Amino acid sequence: MDGPASGRTWQSFWHATVDAETRASVVQSLYHEGPRLRPFLMQFFVLLSLSTLIALYGLLENSTAVVIGAMVIAPLMSPLLSVAGAMVCGWPVRLLWSLALLLAGSAWSVLLAWSVSSAIPDGPTLPDQVLSRTSPGILDLGIALAAGAAGAYVQVRHEASSALPGVAIAVAVVPPLATVGICLDTGQVDLAGGALLLFMTNLVAIQLAAILVFLVTGFADLPREARTRRRYRWGMILSAALVVAVAYPLLLHTREVVTDERLEAATQDRAQEWLGDSDLTLMDVEALDDEITVELVGGDQPPAAGELAQKVAADVDQPVRITVYWTPRSGTTARGEP
Image (cartoon, one colour):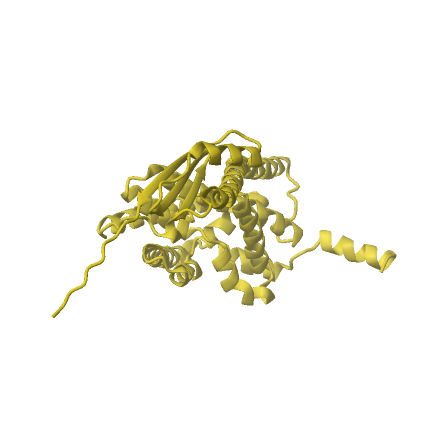
């Protein structure tokens, strides 16, 4: 309802505070210092190695369930959130340490996946689980923002800890790193770059979302010292700028994918009419920019491709170039007698 009570509710929401005990607990879970550092690093790299191997095998086996298992045990969310916490609280030493751990862990995941993948015989094609992580779109940015917000919220509000497994699955940072290693092993640098873009998208989006959640939940008060305040402000600007920087290629790729799918749908519709009652089967249609490939199998020779190209160009209102590949289908029948 409206009125003074409602105003106080919204004011308390936007100016939320975290008690000293909760803040100390969150800090202890994010930053492992003193005698706690050595056992933490050992646990971190053991779990990271295991999650990378599980993700690698799941990707190569094309198994969604196995890849999800790797997400659940991956420990990279810890340095991701500790970077955000250090930025919003103005802790430069903790920020540098968290960044170093994040970079070292990421590099180790790629190196491990690359090394193990090189010892496994390559299949004729990359599995769908690998390919799906080499062409990120703008929706991946939205997923990463929501996942980062959820991870930071669960970190501050322990009563929501039951959501941790779901957060771990949503924050998919290890599978893209394993994909980078696989693609480097097969020499497909362009696909490795796409997987790396997906990882960077997750990284910067989680950072920005976590910073905002840490502020809204009251974990970090706005700094009062001028130097610390400037440091915090530049951290926010840098995080937002990085999100915008990755959003641009994601938008371009999403637009290309939508355009290609539109061309493929128009070509499939027109191809059925173009083939008519001929003894030809439409096997596949692929579009890339304005280049469309049509694959046919059958006993009849296909009609002229120009007729199909004109109709598709009129439907999509843009020039297209269609290449038709035809595989003749013939057979013989023989009867054997005892």
